[in-house]
Length: 472
Image 1 (tube, rainbow, N blue to C red):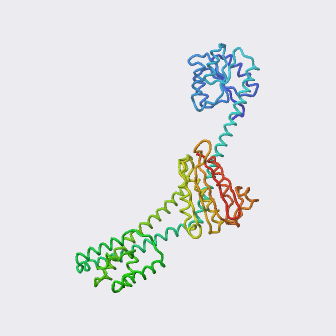
Image 2: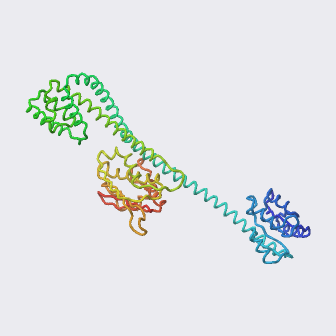
C-alpha cells in the first residue's frame, strides 16, 4: 500500500472534484474522488481515509447526513471531516461543527487555504493517533505493573508461608492428636460404663443412687484447671479427710475425686463412700466424667483446627476484583497472629489493645501482607523471645473518624539510626544472603501508600515501633 496520506473527496460537481484532485496530487496526497454521498460512506467504511473533504449540498443525501453516519460508525468516527461548501451562513457552519466537523471552507476556495487546513488537521490527526497509541501503551504498562505487584504480594505470601508451614502443621497436629486421644479415652470409658453401671445400680438403694447422681453432677460442673503440684497437695489433704471419717481405700478414692474436681465438702457423699463397693462406684462416676470431659476436649480441638484452617484460607485468598471493601483492621491482624501462634507461644508475650474503630474501605488481602511482614520482622528482631504489642485505635483529627492507627511494637535489638532511612528501600536487607529478599518493607510501604496512608518507624535498642495510618 502507498505511504501517501489518503483524502476522500465527496462532491456532486465533477469540476470541483477535478480541481481538488489536481491540487492534492501535486502535494503527494492520494485523492479519492466520489460524487455520491452513499457511495462515499461505503468507501470510507471499506478503507478509512486519513481525512475527508465533504460538500454539503448533494442529491439523495446531504453532507450533514453523511457526516452524521460516519461519526456514528466506530470504524470512521475518528476521521477528521472538513466541510467545503458555498453555504456561508453562520447557522450552516455551527451545524457542521455540531455534527463533528473539524473545519469549514467556503467556496470559492483558494488552493493555498485548502492545503494549509488539510496539513493542519492531518498533523493534528497524526498527533492524536500517536497520543492514543501512547495512552494504550500506558494502560497496558499500568495493567502489567498492577499484575506484577499482585504477583509480588502473592510471592511474599508464599514465602511467609514457607517460614510458617512447620508451625501451622504443629498447630493442626496438636489438636488432632488431642482428638485421637480423647476418642480413645471416650471409647474405653464407655465400655467400662456400659459393663459396670447396670450391675452397680442393682446393688444400690434408691438413696445411694441419688447420692451417685449428686456426685456425678458435682463432677460435671465447670472448674478452673489446677497444676500437677496443686493436684498432689489436694490428694494428700483429701486422703487425710477421708481417713478421719474411717473410709477405707482413701488414697484411691482421693485420686479419682481430685481428678474429677470434687475435693471440698465431702459431707453429702459420705454415705456413698462408706459403701462396700465405694471404689467401683467412684470409678464408674469417673468414667462418665471422662466421657464428658473428653467430648469437651474434642470440641475445643476442632474449634482450634477450624480457626487455623479459616485463617490459612483467609490469608491465601486474594481478591482480584481491584475493588476496595469495608473491613475491620483488627480482624486481618488476628488472622496473621493465628498463623504465627506456634512461633509466638514459645517465648513471645503478645499484647493486643484493640479500641473500637470504624470499618474502613481497603484491600484486606493486601493489608494482611503488611501485618505479616512487620510481625515477621519483629519476631526475627526479638530472636523468638520478648514482647510484641499491637495497638489499633481510631485516628483523631479533621475530619472526625479520619481513619485507623496501628502501632506494632517489639522488644528486639532495634534499628541503627543510619539504617532507618533505608529499610523501606527495595532490595535493602540486613539479613544474611538467602534469608531475605529486601522487598518486605518496600511492599509494605507501597501497599500503605496505595491506601493513601503512611508508615513511620521509631527505634532504639529494646523497642521498635511501626506506626501505620490508614485513612477512612
